[in-house]
Structures are given as structure tokens and as C-alpha cells.
Length: 237
Image (tube, rainbow, N blue to C red):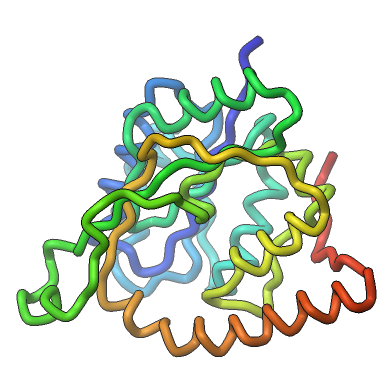
């Protein structure tokens, strides 16, 4: 039985990368039925890059003022019509068999709610060589505990809740900790499915991520002590 997939791409000032990102979705061996792109108040040429795809009906485009990545993700989940949802950051790339491999995994294992895959990181080639030299990039693919590597049933968000809009860089790790507490069933494919770009914005966000991680960990410990999982938001059935 075929199942429909909605792809979610939040965009904020990703003009140099968004074309490669979208093309990697359009090149999938299993084509999604819906590609939701929300332009989150970009101030660069991101919208100019997106408009040709929207005019051809290849993406479902919304553009508005900046509200942050977590709010954008939650809005896109509410717009999703597919049986499953996949997420891709605007500066990252999927390998062509990503959706097909993960869909096969989920259909073969009906007890699963979600499927992850490996990620290979790369230093963005547009960076000056001096900046590239200061970025650590693992040489081998690694298990991708990231939303960019995930394919998940839309109904699973009824168990886990949505993304916490208080977090700007730790949104996924907070969600994933709550998802595990809620009993989310998932598997990790040994195949590389996503290429993750390393660049300046990642370096700049590290202090904020470390600060947010402390709050996320404390919240998880508090939930464990109180035996009370926390949901954020809701979505259509």
C-alpha cells in the first residue's frame, strides 16, 4: 500500500543553498505528495529562489514575518496532509533514496512510529579557507539523531506533542527526549540519507545551544521526578 509523504522545509536566509536543498527533494526515487516551504521572514534573496518552484506548483509556499524555526515547524505540521512527514533544513541535502529506504523500513515494521538514518557532514565550500580550517568535520557518516534524517507518521505527533517554541537551537533534542518518554518506537537505518552542511551559523549558535541544553535537561529531569510528560501544541488527526 502506497503512503503519502509531506516534506517540511523551513527557510530563513538560505538563498545560497535553498535551490540545492529543494532539488534533492525533487530527485527522490519516491516522490513526496506535498512539499511545504515556509519562508520565515528571510531578508536575503531566499524568496526569489523559491518563487519559480511555487509558480510551477512544485512546492506549497508560505511567506511571512520571522517567527522562529520551532513555530515554523509546528505550522508546517498542521498544514501537512501526508501519512508521513519528513523534515529538511534549507541548507542541507538528501540523498536520492532517502524517502524510499525509510518508507520501506516503516512498512516492513508496522510497530514503528519513525525511522532515522545516518548523516554525513560536510564543510560548506563557500567558506573562506581560514574558516574551513577551524571547523571540525567528522570524516565518516554518523547515526543521524536529527529531524533532517527522520521520517515519521504524522499521527505520532499526537503522542509526542509538537516542538517547544521556547527553544531556537535545541528544539529537536527537547522534542526527541519527550518523544522517548512518550514511548515513540523508532529505528536507525545503517544507510546515509542526509548530507548536513557545516558553516558559520552553526558555529555562532553553539553557545546558545549549550545554554538551551541545560534547560532541556533540567526539564526532562523534572518530568521524570513528577512522572508528567509535557506536550506542546496539537495537530489535526
